[in-house]
Length: 68
Image: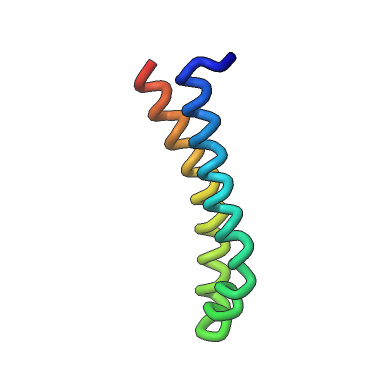
């Protein structure tokens, strides 16, 4: 059996992964739309997407350390 802290962490991780997964599926359309305006803008968006993915988990881990 999981304690509430572990269960909440798992639920948060699944929610984050589902959110980024949905955006990942839309990524080709977003990149094509941005690339039509500016290839640089499309590249910046891709880099920000990857940084945000890891940044969310880093911020969550940091918040959890402060709580403990």
